[in-house]
Length: 582
Image (tube, rainbow, N blue to C red; front, side, top):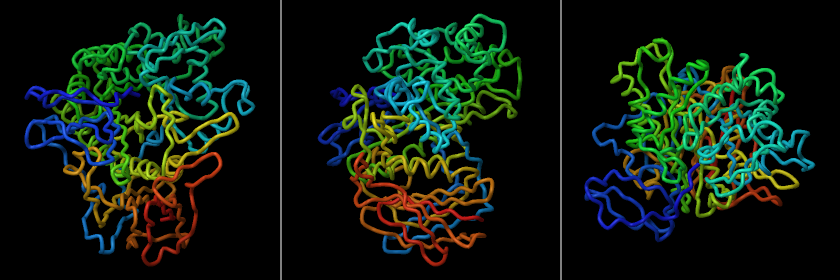
C-alpha cells in the first residue's frame, strides 16, 4: 500500500520528454490533476467536487507505440440505448467463458494502523482466543470463505526482516517502522500469521523484502516455511515449535518498488534484473512456489518493461523445462474514489481497461520472447484494490475509512470487473481486510460490518465457478469520470453486469444500478429455473451517502423471491444478485 501525497508539485511547463510522467496523489476540490489534451500534458482544474485516489497513470495508454486491446466481445457486450427505453440483459447458462479463480476473493493484512494489532490479533480482549486472535474476525473470514490472504505488506515489507518476528516473543527486537512511521514490536510474525491462516482456513501469500532485504534472507524465509529437510532454517522452524512445513505457495517479489514512498525504490531496469535473478534462485530452492512480479497499475512503462524482461524463457532456468514458468503472476494496484457518487461508482471500470492492457503486454512478451506455448501463461494478481480516499482516511493515521452506500456500489462494480475478466485475473486481494480501509472494523466490544462488506460477501458466496457471456442493453452515464481518461476508453453503463454459473449449476446475475434517481424495469432473457423461482439479494439504502455505524445498520442484504416472469426492476442506487438453478 502506498503513502500518497495530497498534492504533487506543479511543473512550470512539461517538456516533451515529460509527457509520460506519472504522478501519484489525490485530486481534491480546487486541486490539480494531469489531463491528456490535444496539446502537451497540462495542469487543469478538476470538475467541482472531484476526488481521485489512485496510483494509476493519468494517461493510461502511455505505451504510445502499441494499440490497446479490444475487449473480448464474448465476455460481455454492451449496447447503448436512450434512458427512456427499456433495458435488457440476456444470458445463456450453457455459454461458459472462463473459470473464475476463487482467489479473486482474497484478503490483505499489513502491519499498518490497527490491521494486525487490534484487528486480527488482540490478546487480552475477551473476544480473542487462546492465541490472541479475534474470534469475531475469524468468524467473518470464514463466512466470507476467504481463500488467500496477503502478508505482511504493503510498504511495510520493504524494511521488514522476518527473523525479527520468530522465536520467543520476549526475545524479539522492537524496530522502528518506516513505512507508516511507527514502532513494530514483532509480537506477531511468521508463525503467528500462519497459525491464524490455519485457524481461518485460508492460504497465506507472502511478500518478500525487496527494499532492505537480501536474496539470502528471502531464501532463508522460504526454507523456514517450506523445507522438510535437515537444514538450518527448517530446523529453526522445528525449534520454534512447528515440525511440518507450512508449504507457503505464493511469494511476491517486492511491493511497489517503483514508488517514491518506497524504501529502496528502484528503476524498472534494476527491478527487472533483480526480480529475474531472485526468481531463478527461489525456483531452485523450491520449484513448487508461485512467484508474483511487482507491477504498477498495468498501463505504465514499468509494467511494459518488467513484463518484457521477466516473462521469458531460457534453457538455464527451471532446468530447461518447457512446461514450467518462473513467473506465475504480475501484480497491479489501483485504488479508486471520488466525492461525487457517479464518478465514484463508475471509477472501477478503469481497472477493467488496466487488466486488458496488462494481459496484452503478457501475451506480447510471450510472443516476442518466444516462450514455449506449453509454458503456463502468467495471469494478473490484483493484490491491492479498493475504494480509498486518503483525504478522508490518511494512511499515516491508520486509514480507517467510513464507507458509504456509493462505496459499496463501487466495490460491487470492482467485483463485476474481476468476474468479467476472469480469464486474466488469477488473484485479487481487497486492501485491506480489517480496520484499514476495510469492510470490517473492530472495537473492544465487537465488529462493525461496513457497507462494502455486503457486496463482497454476496460475490464470494454465489459468484464462483465459470463466467457466463452476458449481453446488456442499457443507458450510459455520460458525465465526468474518475479518472478523466475513462470517458474515452470504455463504456460506463448505468447497469453494470456480470454473470457466473457454479459447478453445481446455480446461475448468479450481478447487477449494479448506479443511477441516483431512476429504477430500471428490465427485460431479462435466459432465466429458466429448475426450482421454479429466483432468489433475490439486494443491497441498497435511502441515499448514496448513508453509512453503517455501531448503533444502526443502514445498508445490509434484503432477501426476497421472484417468480422469474415479466420485467425485473433494479432499484436506483442498488446492487442486486439474482440466483437460480439452471
